[in-house]
Image (tube, rainbow, N blue to C red; front, side, top):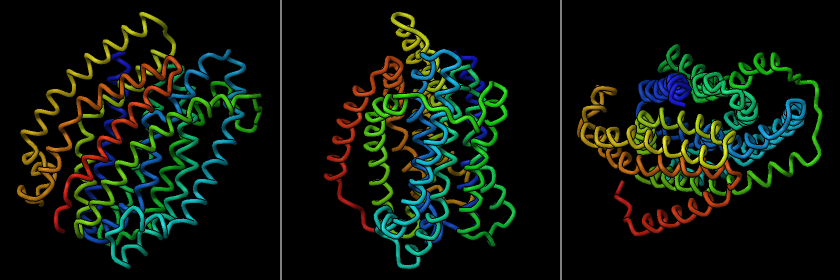
Length: 386
């Protein structure tokens, strides 16, 4: 388990480094101002979809269904799901593109008129990342079932590489449209790189063989997961909305703090994916033993990370962003975001224990209770002045 986690952690680390480089180059090119805020508002929904799928929105429901089938039915299941998820991604892209004007006003109510125009234009391009995200999540399932976690874990790197190259090449001359186009290219690379491995395993993209009842079976499993994810993303949306009301640059600072807080989460994300694959193929005491080992590993990883981030937030910001002030908002944001890391790690592992047993409703109920408590706390907190 730890060996697979280590290799997946290294793959995820490169993706996270590319993601942080994207945000870093964005601030270097445009500064923490209205243009950066507008692009990050337009990026919210596509990024939320990508992160949700990377966190297991589809695989947590589909992996047990895939593994319980014999080899010939696995290929038929994959062949039937691919065109359906592709069409779902295209439909979602069309909805996002058509509703871009309304959506960016909902996500960033504090933007000015130019910011709304830039954000809507960016979302109309970024919406077309959805088909690539959906196919990548589907194609990762056979690889995870065969314990090929590293190849499946390269999605973040593949997505972030084109925008990083674009920003590094054009710097101050970079445009929102150009950057959004680079992101769409990254979304195409994500499933494209997995195609050779799937082809070698016997899957053929032109063989669209459907399996009776497979879609209904998946929807029954994924429904509670989707509700749970919407509750979680609702909190992220609320955070982005409040940040947009705090003045120019606030969205950029909050987003950068979130990127930095992901540094200690690399191994945890990898551990979650490996554990889900192992527990889905286990039962009873063996599954419980894997959970105990996972919780112990998560605690050992998060406790030092929480203490280090709280104590050294200012030094970390100075090290990674030497041009930013040590007394700016970023160190304090980073320290506060670090507080719930360990509890979030436990929650994710316990949820995957339930997913492996086919129970997607218990994690949903827990997520909804937590979201309600958090929203109540938000309502009692006065908004700072801009």
